Amino acid sequence: MDYIDQLGLRGILRVRVYDVATGKRLQHEEKRNLVCKGAKEALVRLIAQASIHGGSPTNVDFEETKLWAIYAGTGTALPDVEDTELDTVAFKKECVQPIAFSILDGEATLQMTIESGEGNGNTFQEAGLFSRGDNDDPNAGGITGVLMYARQLHGAIAKTSGISIEYTWRFQILV
Image 1 (tube, rainbow, N blue to C red):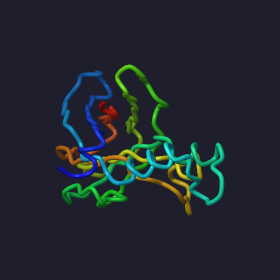
Image 2 (image 1 turned 45 degrees about the vertical axis):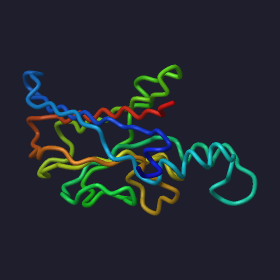
Image 3 (image 1 turned 30 degrees about the vertical axis):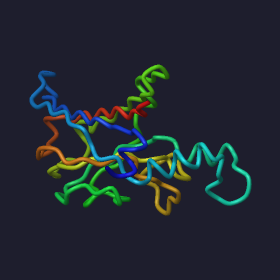
């Protein structure tokens, strides 16, 4: 058993593909994901009240480590706990913040949709859950402090303007 399992973190990725014209669901996949080292780092910083920037922590530190964006990629490398990035990033977008939150269940659920006019021409097959870092825009250049919370592969989805892809991520701390 590795340290992530001992910590009791679990993530579940759900991927749904919809026909834009009809709204019909074309594909659905749900699976547990690999929780990466970045999640452990963010939680330890929170518990220890440790600053990312040195010295005493500030509100900025806690903004930078919060769950923020889902990245989608075209890579096929198997997820590893040491991952800090997707194999091949093709799309980044801020999540809906959060669509559900349960203190009782220790769970936060976030969602991001690649709309009909976004990401076309890519065959998506990997996704990752990331922290905010020092910028609200996950596509801005030079962002620092981004942590990968989780990563998973999924079935290949050839993105066209006729479909949208909905990623929903449940991230849970188990007791």
